[in-house]
Length: 128
Image (cartoon, rainbow, N blue to C red; front, side, top):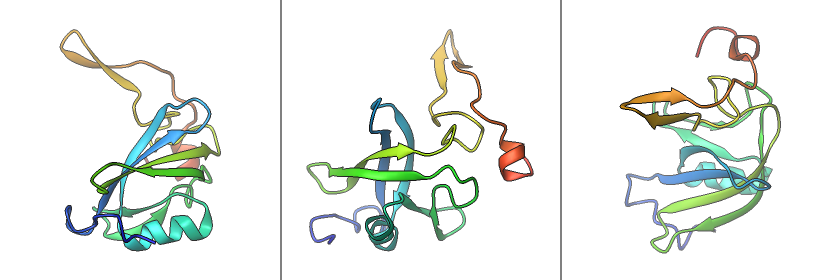
């Protein structure tokens, strides 16, 4: 399964980039260990390893905003993955946006370049 992937280069983790399979928009970046990668293949829902919480988590397990796996590519070094996924729900970002990439550098500051897609307090309860 992961014979060609280099989990050792980044202390057991691989960078995981997720794109919307229809629009090609980058939705988020996370990290996977072998277990998260295996669970993604088994369930068809993109699953990550949380570096801060030190645990496996499936995108959507709290919000219902899942990422349904469509395809996977790896880079030439085998130390990064690109996931094409179908986002279920109004947004992927825990701050309430369609994508985690909703800010753009402009005139020496970060500017929010889109409107929130949902209210994270309604979905998650307390502010994330």
